[in-house]
Image (cartoon, rainbow, N blue to C red; front, top):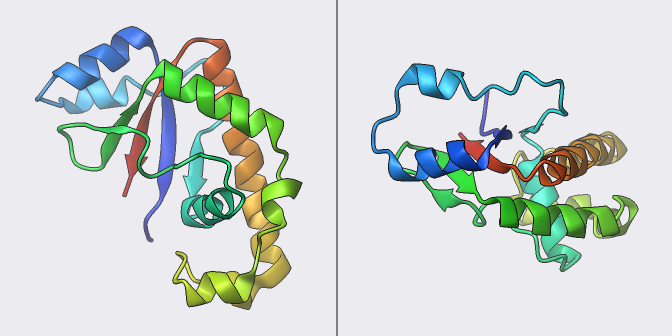
Length: 154
């Protein structure tokens, strides 16, 4: 187990409700699971490695600090505008561009979670590629539908 990150697509109405409620009934959270067959927003533990590459490539995407903190621990709201802007950037930069900044030794030295970069080398790069592609797909899918995200980190 460890720190994972995921994005769940929500409608603008659900997002408005999420940002104004102080009570989070479990059934409301369970009801947010998207049933339309869209791509998964689950990043597993790749979020920090992706964040490192995005920062080093100076793409202007911050996976950790973009969402608005919600009253429920470890949940953040991404507005449809945030989703759309991020989708546009991700669509302009295939993984090969941020991958130029993949430096396992520097990532381990910087303490980039989960500290597998030297140990796993090319396999870790493949892991990041897989999750970057998924990230691009889920953002593109949500942006095309005018959706926001409920981001969970923990």
